[in-house]
Length: 374
Image (tube, rainbow, N blue to C red; front, side, top):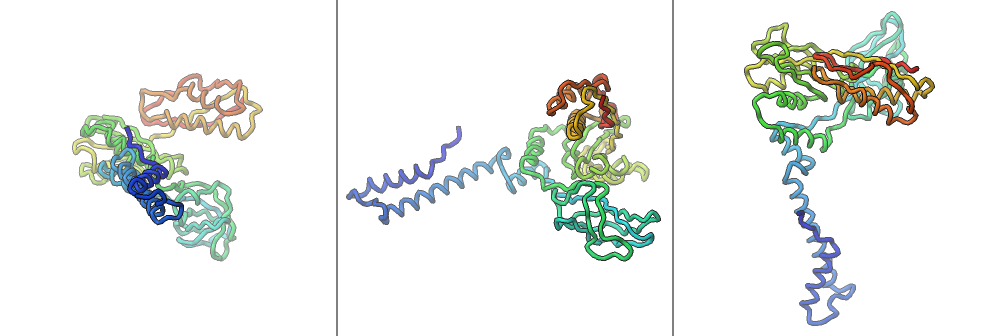
């Protein structure tokens, strides 16, 4: 049972009662008396002390700790708060063939958000210049939709100053919240140390920077191997969340050859896993291959564009929740039907294709293909 913290009014009444009981006269606590003011001050200080003790009790356990104390509890299990990331976009400008801009050139959005180019770029023969830009500040604020107008912050000879965002490379994210960090931390505390069981690899992978989903296939590449599939749904949105790089082993594993060492996102995860995994297995970090699934839905031929967009998002979310590059499970069709039914204006629909549950297959991750309405 939690300790009941006294209210400030109760503490004031208690102090007033103590003072009154010790006075020989009955007028010692008149409205503006010195003792009355002193009693109110003492009650206020006592109330703050109770509050501080309540805060100490809250920070004394991982389940309720917050802020830097939560980070300290998490660090005991090698779980660390995910930092904020920078938005990465692709912008296109029009110019004379051969004209160019240098790496580090500033690009501005209309509301004062700034980006910088990440590489030199030259206008091609078609008269367009395509360049990747990274936000100057981290977080979700610099994220922009395709078509957003951007402007070169300085004059570039032969290139029009106005351009537009034409692709999303990676989403900017805020620093991880306490709730998200606590969820990962509690999973680490609750997981039993089993020296490299399937769940251990999943937990280790999810603690790698940028990884949002992970699956493990023991013996996935033969005896003595473990295959870990990972996804980067936020930082690799331009690649639909799929890792960018080459599947393979950690560069720190002296059994790896030049051809079997991972590259890019897969290498970053493999190197982090190598510090935690048992010494005997060969651990391959892999990107699942997309397996688009097309849908045909009847009964919604006259549905609005906004409704269709919501339907696509609902189907995609179910696939994120239930899809896996490991055989033995399925994306349940009834879950997709329930998600669509929850959208306003979708009554009377029937999914005619696919006809049943979508079986997960090793190495392939179900994704949303095209949706046809009839």
